[in-house]
Amino acid sequence: MKKLILAASLAAVFSASAALAESIKIGVTPGPHAQIMEKVKEVAAKKGLDIEILEFSDYVVPNQALADGDLNANSFQHQPYLDNQIADRGYEIVSVGPTVNFPMGVYSKKVKSLDELTDGAKVSIPNDPTNGGRALLVLADKGLIKVDAAKGLKIGPADVTENPKNLEFVELDAAQLPRSLDDVDASVINTNYALEAGLNPKTDSIAIEGEKAPYVNVIAVRVVDKDAAWLKTLLESYHNDEIKAFVAEEFKGAVVAGW
Image (cartoon, rainbow, N blue to C red):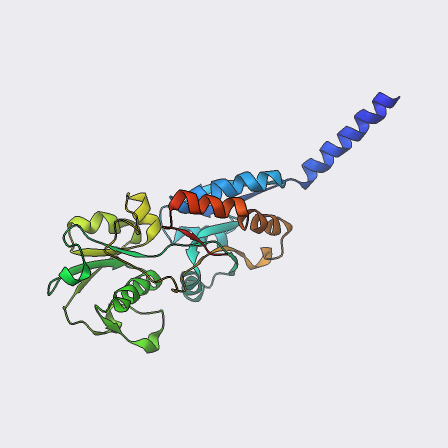
């Protein structure tokens, strides 16, 4: 009789555990976001949350997939980019927590400093409004150009008010920027794509974004899921000392924890 009672009790425990377990899909871009989420997955599994990670090669599809319900969350973008996507496309998605920051770097195969850029030099930047604007702000911060301050973060080449060296801006898909280094004099590259190409902003860039730039990345979900039980577990798993230590050790300052 005792064995039967014990067996029944164990069955009830396992049944309850199975009922508590949840499975979600999270979209990321290759490189650090994917690597970090793999570690988050390990932490979350101990809390009963199973994470399936899907990688996307660009910045456009992950928000569409989230809005369409093909993903439960995504982790790849900073707040200004998300705000722009919501304004342009009407997505009912929202950021729910910070992740990491990727200081943007300027890279070149032709010069060793920004001062060496000559008149009419070609500089490639991302072709989406927020990351392109971010790149221009990096150049402005380094004194190469001046931009229309009234436009805030949403600027493009047309908003450059002073350009003493007559720099020519070549707008490309962010993922293609590392490949452009043979064809331009310099390129301002998002760090996730730089790292994927073997470039480290701390050691390989000729200039790097200031630490106070407002571009901490975020986890985004659909508005209807902002209070979901699994989301609390996901955020607890990400905002974890184990994850912070992993980021510091793995990326050596090229990626920094934003929480």
